[in-house]
Image (cartoon, rainbow, N blue to C red; front, side, top):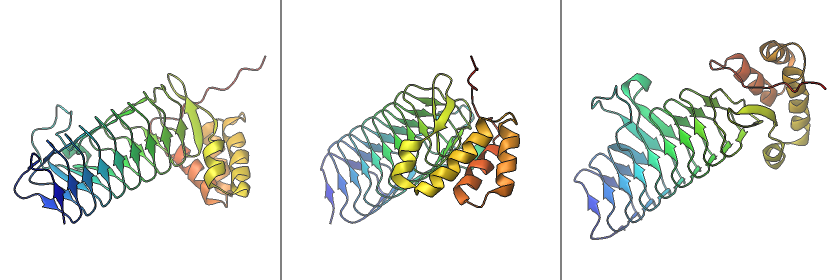
Length: 262
């Protein structure tokens, strides 16, 4: 059973699952695949080769899957894959990949993508993330799982943001933000662990281990990279290893401003 408004435009070839709702004046392209239980609300547009997973909702006037904003794009076959139970709010703008980035933009499950968010070409987004209003991700950005990015925050191309990271609103992110960390500012720098997010999701013993590792990596005189390598060699906890490995393998660097002693 489907609930499709008679003013909606569904191009021939589109695959529409069961219990799908498509609102007035919305558009679904011929190459789109809409899974069971998806809601596409009034005025939303689904373009190109776009897949939307079960129980996701695309809110009013969102534009999903239109061609990437990349001057190197010349009509190649590219794709946008969106997982299950995502909430894509009003006036969001999500692009597919490009040939140079593997051709796919991928968004996982259970993400809240608030109004006016832009997720550009070739981004790789995990699960359970929150992008507040007017977050803008440039091309090739990677975001792990359970991250929160505050409103009005632009993220530079090729930046990586780790699991459980928290980025304050109106920041400008130009370098990689490690997992479990809180960053803010223009330009954004790592300030501390994201203790609020960790306490909601991680055991106390693991938080204590992350606190110890953070101190050795960021607050010692060894330097961030050397501190991470030393901690990785002795760590037994997977989250500590994840933190260290992210820092060791960063390509854009980790922004951290050591407080000057008075």
